[in-house]
Length: 266
Image 1 (tube, rainbow, N blue to C red):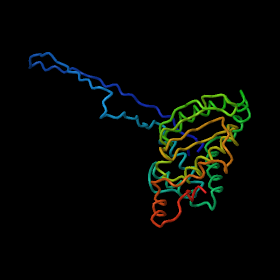
Image 2 (cartoon, rainbow, N blue to C red):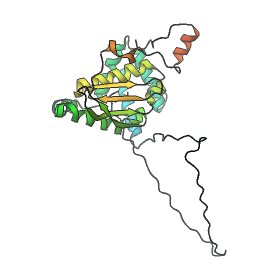
Image 3 (cartoon, rainbow, N blue to C red):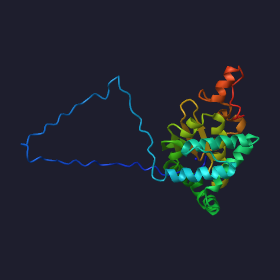
């Protein structure tokens, strides 16, 4: 869940160095090998830059399994589908199971808490969070999030964000294209199983304020650790309409039902 405040795996990129071997056939005369090198202009108007895709690390499967298990225990049900697709099924069931969005958010917070030893959270909030007016804790969780949550959200990087006192700090995490949002296809699932519970988890159980700003146009997301979120009535993100790819939104448009706001987010 987008840091749903969560535990996520480190994404090492493996680099393979190919070995080249010269095999010489003694029955054939040796010959000179000619190499031809071709250059192409990088400024060609017909070519587009290729964005590196996230490559799964060795711990990704383990972290996915642990996170999905905790979510399934909360829901009381698990999907027959394997891997990430099954995780999205369980997330959908989490939303459907609860009568209100507040119930869903509270359930998601419980899932996040279950991923950490209770004493660890208490010590972090007590000892680390007060250091340097919260900056140390904010920077630390930003770096850990960027290192360990890419299996859930996709490629992300640490960046600088503006804090409430007018200064800036490297306590942001920018998610290029959130896999959780893209696969769930739902504003409500994003808000109630990721954004709101993750903000609550970090503030209440780790002592670190967090503002998450998902972009429902390009599926990017900006985490701002050390920044307090606005009140729900002032948060424009909570009033976003359904995604174009949402199957429920498509059906509502066909039935001419008002879809100014995602019903799962209200």
